[in-house]
Image (tube, rainbow, N blue to C red):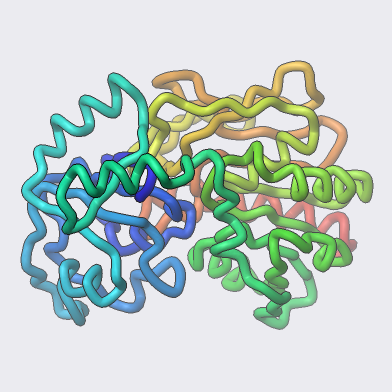
Length: 329
């Protein structure tokens, strides 16, 4: 059972399927051939498959020297149902016309699945971050600068971006962000579910803002920080899920980047002190925020994207410059 969504990504299916932000969702791939390079450990963004189900047109046999199993074998070993030979173009047209909706994938008869679906909670009603967050603080790296990561379902690629810059990382549960308030800077991660259910987190982030220490968020983290500073959140009809979405920079370079997205909600910062620095030119969705008086920087897209694009990894450098300046290092 899950919310049926779609992605137009043409590569990176292992990273997509292990992204904790997809918890609670059934993912449809618009790319007609999925599975051609198999699955390997270095492609994982978490400890396993996080989607509730997979829908695609054709699952191909792998042909890659790193592959240890096929997509079909991986999903079976993970206990995650998938269905192939689906007209995904027709399905995506339905989702674009009517919006994302709840669905079910399984071996039962359609009537049985439909009855189970009717009894299941809606995607917007479940606090999924509790299912993908660490339970206790975890410290990684040995740098002098400490960045606390509030783990709402953080991707390994994000942690790697900080570690390779010589930063000490402290991962803390999403229910206990204060466990990282003594770090030099705070980062609120990506994650699944409805951000409107995370008042417990946005309230704590509002307290952290009073410290005037550097603060960054990506995807769900962007939304939570915006909520903490008074912005409104609304659900998109079918969201942005792709690895080829344009983002226009209105502040730093004036350029347009190709980026990876995975979000079904968007921010309206009007009436707050938050300023927009990046937008999605296709529909005007707010993709980046900053604060004129406070060291706050957010992105709705994923600058750490693996396998790519890598156009905007400089955002991490910009945030760490704020952190180094604040820490006097």
